[in-house]
Amino acid sequence: WESCRSILVGELGMDEDAADKTMIRAFGWGGQTYWRNAKVEEVPEVEDVEARIAFLLEIGIEQADIAEKVLGKVPEVLGCDVETRLRVNVEHITKNYFMKPNTKNFRNYINRVPQVLGNNLDCAAQGLNCAGECNRCWARC
Image (tube, rainbow, N blue to C red; front, side, top):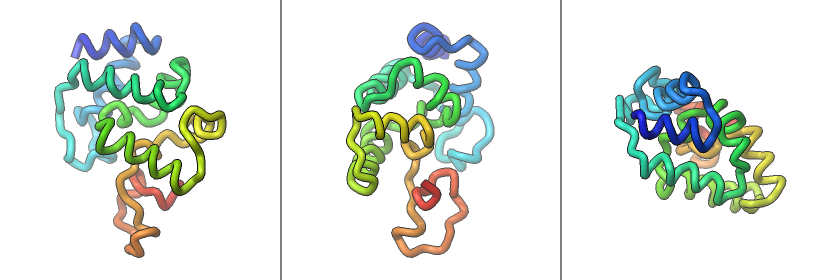
């Protein structure tokens, strides 16, 4: 926990309290409105935290915006796996919203609606009734 906190403090400029609050939500130590018990009190790994921050930088999110505009709004992004969630969602944005990573429009979109990085459900596209998991659904983006 301490090592991951120091990454958020050192690399992203968060204070220790904000870093703890981010990790509590990102790794399922607090409320379960996002994770729905899929992640409960997971112990964060330094390699995973570093990989997720590196991925955000790779897709064009500026380091100064990660703490405030992405993790400040949706800390759960820090708990999302790069390959199975973050990369898949960037591909979804590229294909369906015609925005490419590392562009101004893409960066602005992610900063405005960072929850898209954690989406894993699309009721409207699948022709489903609302599944009641709107905080992870593409239908509202």
